[in-house]
Image 1: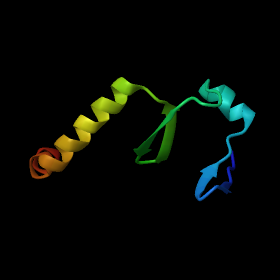
Image 2: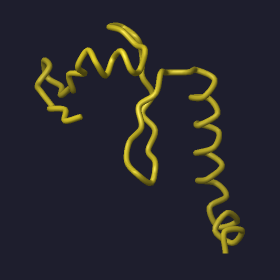
Image 3: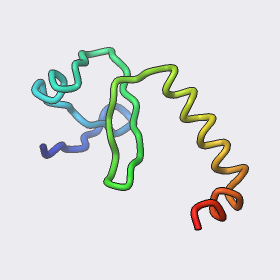
Amino acid sequence: MKLKITTIGNSAGVILPKELLARLRVDKGDELHALETPDGIRLTVYDPKLAAQMEVAERIMREDRQVLHKLAQ
């Protein structure tokens, strides 16, 4: 599905078509979470529990980068 970036005030935004909103099961005013994956960006419904877990994981990856690198070898 092709999306276009547009100007919204002083910011930029993406207009999500009705079909995509239906597939995501979201509506105007709902929050989304963007996850970076090896294949690109994945949009999911915002889950505060998942967001907190991702913050912890990102902190651990930053702090223990060398250990994780050795474990991956």
